[in-house]
Every structure is written in C-alpha cells, then in structure tokens.
Picture 1 (cartoon, rainbow, N blue to C red):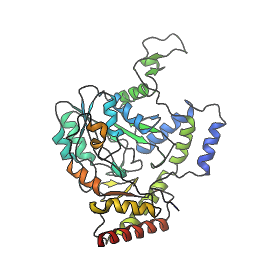
Picture 2 (picture 1 turned 135 degrees about the horizontal axis):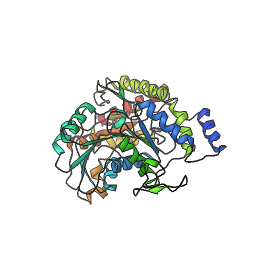
Picture 3 (picture 1 turned 90 degrees about the vertical axis):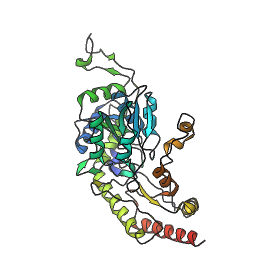
Picture 4 (picture 1 turned 90 degrees about the horizontal axis):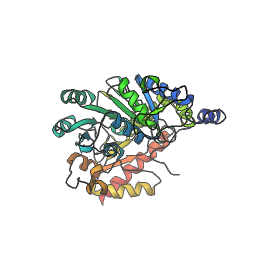
Amino acid sequence: MFIPYGKQSVDEEDIQAVVDVLRSDYLTTGPKVAEFEQVVADYVGAKYAVAVSNGTAALHIACLAAGIGHGDEVITSPITFAASANCVLYCGGTPVFADIKKDTYNIDPEEIERKITPRTKAIIPVHYTGQPCEMNAITKIAKRHNLIVIEDGAQVLSGEYKGRKVGSISDVTTFSFHPVKPVTTGEGGMVTTNDKRLYDRLRLYHTHGITRENELLEKNDGPWYYEQLELGYNYRITDIQCALGISQMKKLDSFAECRRRLASRYDKGFAENPHIVIPYQHPDCLSSYHLYMIQVPAVIRRKVFGELRNAGIGVNVHYIPVYKHPYYRAHGYQDAYCPNAEEFYNRAITLPLYADMTEEQVDFVIAKTTQIIDRELKG
C-alpha cells in the first residue's frame, strides 16, 4: 500500500456531471463555465470570477490586469511553487522575495515593509499550506504605499481570515483546481475580484484579448462582430472541467472538515514528541489544510524522508525556496537569502493529507514517522 501526500476525491456524482456535459451540445465555452464562475464567486463572497485553464494562468492574468510590467517590482514569498514569482517575470516585472514568519511559514508583513522601494507595484501573499496570511497587516501596508494585492490562494479555498472567506478580501485572488487542491477540475484555475475594471481586463486577457461586449467595442458591425483589444492568451477552461468543478464545490465544506479533523489527529499524535515541530495555526485564521507540514532535525531530514518513502508513505517537501532554483540563480538572485525560509526548507517534510484518507492511515503515518525519527536520533 502506498499513501500519497495528496489526491483527488471523485465520486459517482462527479463522474455523472462530466458524462452529462459530454452528451451535451457544449464541451467548451458553454454554460457550465459561467455557472462554475458564479458558484465560486458566491462561495467566497466575491462579485466577479473568471475561470481559466490552471492556477498559473490565473496568476498571470491577475498580474496583467493589475498592470504589472517592465521596471515594476512585486513582493512575494520564497516558500511557494515557482508560479507565484514566475507570473511576475511573464509580465516583465521583477519578483522580490520577503522572508517568512517562523511560526506560520507565511510571508512576514514586516519583511514586506522592508522590501518596498519606489518601484514596488504589488504584493503577492501566498496562503501557504492553506493557512491564510495576516491580511489586515498586509492590506494596511498596501494602502499606505498604494500597492495592489494579488492573493495566491491556490491552496486555501475554504480557508477563512477573521471569519471571512479568502477570495473577496483583496484586489484580486487566484485559485487552483489541480487534483491535490481542495477541489479539482483536473487542471484549472480561477480569479476572483470585486473590481469591475479588473474583471473586464481579466476576461480580456484569458481569451486572446478578444471581446464581444458592446460597451468595450470601438464600433459594432453586427451580432457576429468582435474585436481584439489586448494581446491576450488562450487560457480558457472547458465545460467538461467546470461540470466537475461545480459538482466538487458541493462537497468542498465536507472535504475541508475531513482535512481539519485528520490534521488535528496528526497534531495530537505528534504533540509529545520534542523532535517534531507541528504546524502552528494563527488564531485569526481557519486553514483549508491543503498540506500538513512538519519540521524534523535538519541532520536527519533526508534519511527520514527516504525511510518514510520506503515504508509506503508518499512524503514530499514543499518547497525549495524559489530563488534557489537554477533559473533564478542565473538571473540575478545568486545572492538572495531569506534565513527563515532556508531554515524551514532544511527541516520540512510534507505528510499525506487528503479528504479520503482514513484515520488508520494517519495513525500509521504517525507511528512510522515517530519510530523512524527516534531511531535516527539514537544513531
């Protein structure tokens, strides 16, 4: 038996929703796309949503809509998937990495403040592992310096900050529907906003920069007429995927409850072990628990990782600090250094966590992890 670190939860209702679309007149650019957008917007409390092909596309068009371009700096976390910074590069901007907090592993608002320059245009806080960032502090900084906030919510759907769902707090929020995320469409993403101007730009950028919206056209030659107003991209999502997403959204709260229950079981199982650091939860936040991260002594991390894999436990490490990737080191980040991020990376292990995981599997992971760490430390 192999226990992956994450996986999708798909049932017969989900399968039937996809089959129904396959038998319909629309496989793409049809009614299910708009329906899925409305479902997600309603869930998070946003006025508008634009569904796209993946979470990276969501970040890219969010940066484009925000007007990020050459010469602009955007502050983000180094402990994230590379897309959180790559999206800035796609627009010609420069990612700037602010260190994380030691407890939440999220970007530190004080470090954001220190990294602001006259060229700073935006902040991309990443809700790492599904725990929301300290958005009040980040929002105050953004307002004080007239910065745009693009929340990377790829891991946080269902998460809350001060009782409010992530997705309606800032200028823009992006989500991902990759199979290991809170809900899946196979691949897919979403951008939410309360700003009509940003919404119109998001819609343009996700479909070639082309529109049929009469109020945006320079002229109108007839009902067939459309115009390309921007250099956009083909980031459209299919009705097939959106049908799955709509069905999955019905179960999101139950998925989240399962993840939180299993995470609590992990917490209790490791609570008395002085060699394991369990994830701290900020009192203002309700995590979606996309990932369950522990820290172990750095000197044994590699050995523990290998032994857990050998035991059939699909551990992982999220993430290599972005600036340490060869591409970034070759393009101006060879001297980048965030001490908290690097210390965390050297000790971090991602344990399995997903909605269909059983308590017995969690107990097995707890027992094996404890056994291996104790053995390695005894030498």
